[in-house]
Length: 460
Image 1 (cartoon, one colour):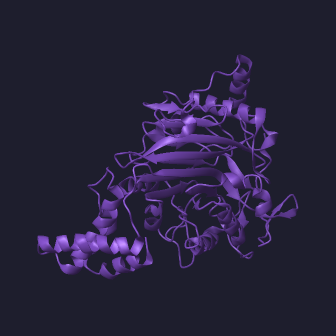
Image 2: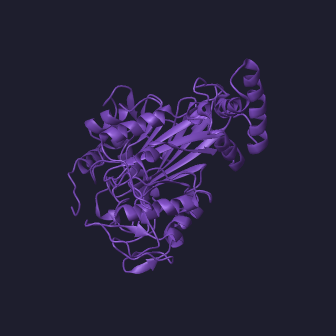
Image 3: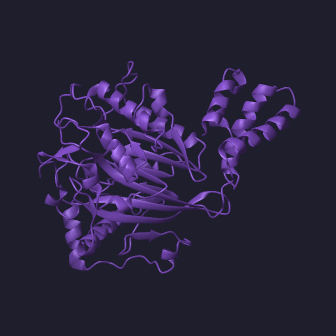
């Protein structure tokens, strides 16, 4: 939204009839090519009606004409095209310092030395390209080394220069709701809030999860990429601290607030709604019946659910037209162990690239999902290649197959040897020859099943 349009809306907000116009605008135009146009023009029309009065059809017509004219001039808005494509990238747990280490603009501490973000990202940077690139920011962001930590095993903080480096690399959406958001209490969370807000006009599109009040966090963050309006919310375990005192921040906690968050997201007018969830048991790659059922029961209208916290990759599935990324594992976190010490069901992270296309009816539809297994996530993240990547894709397919029929209409995705899955009828040229992957050898299948069935805990 342009600054001019924001200022105009604020100027009309003192009129009773204009209160809460934005969330309601265009609510009857749920589908069709004019969906985004209805959102903006509906909002502007109602605002103009407040200025010119509500006493007749003439004022409404005038509002429509002047409202849409103002929006066109102020924002350069054009209707969404039927062939519009959207590229979304998702990665998991991210933090740029060792537990308890002091922060420095030079980089983070890893294995007793300072490691720069640019060095750590050098081999994965080319893949961090998309209209939206999401990461779970599992750390406090501050330049203050004097804030007292909470009494817990691991506490993470990183310098704002690290956040800026991640932004330069291409990550433009952070989830800030997780069990390390409050490592330095509400004061530390307030530092993260302040530093995220400072980046919001410098390429950062959204950073859901933290806020000064519950209502602030319960309200989805909105941004536009191309002609698509995206709404995103985030929830994580280990929350609290709301309402926060001046300068502090906190996160939501409890089942009731999670349900409210999901409901608010589904009611938000947008082309795409994304819910980030930090949840589950660490080192457990297999999605449980209870987890599958809980996610499937989320209200219709949540289009993509992004899971993280387990430090390991989990299955990918569709429930009707909704995409569930149950677990992305680690992306780049200096405070984590080298996952290569674990078996091949747990030793990799996941970068997921989602391709969407706007159809003739104006709605965005899922076309492709690409899975890239990652290694070196504790210090130098890079994509796996060759036989190593093939085996981890086979693991991912096994975890996807385990999701079939766990709830009605759920089907796990299977990726081919290039890590690609294509929807039926996808127009992406790579999908012309795409087919479901063949079964792996019986010996390999048994080895995968045995590895993924292990009960692994921290230190195990």
